Picture 1 (tube, rainbow, N blue to C red):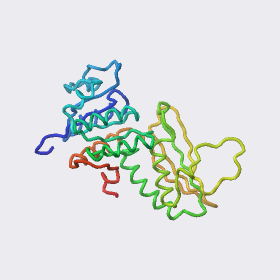
Picture 2: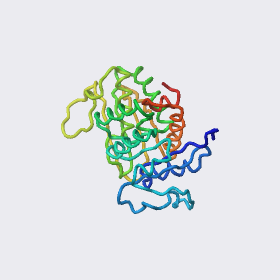
Picture 3: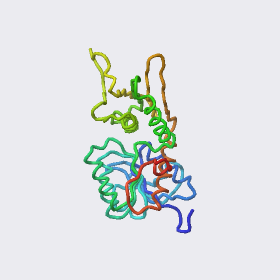
Length: 271
């Protein structure tokens, strides 16, 4: 805890799986305090205490009123959906609230909107807040540079049945890292599905395979398949705790920033 007091954090999607994990992480952190809890209009939880499900009383009521939910916050952590995140972004700009964005599935023009907002407020945006995943990104860049000839590259990801976008933002980020390392443009070389008589594999492509089922938190594997050997770099999440802890680390990083668009490499000092 600093001399200025604990970092005041608001959580978007407070009633969702990730939102509850974030609230629990904030409650357990000595240097952070829950300052707001947002959920969609019509949620049956509106008006209830944000930590009631933990058997605690935080004094923070879940609300759909953005101005009310953000009034006391320094940072908003948002793992919702693109349209919701952009609505939150506009209010954060107005109030000067910083943002940690873990939402995925943005269109290019939506990413541009976030970039423009970062000229006025500090924003950390990453498709995956896990420290381990971001270390894996560094390993992938090194591997791809060394395996840029004679190896076919495939990215396989698996998530729970409720995930609405595919491939995952993390899988796409892995594809971007690998494509950049081997001098390709992912938009031109990505293959997102195969069916029927596809012909021989084009060695310049990067393939994606998506699995959805059960309660899988998040598994990602990048396969470098050569002749006589395979190299697989895999990260598996068994709990959303890792995303919550990474998000708090990002929020702490933003505390010292006035504006700018950052990613987890900046937070972890890997840039």
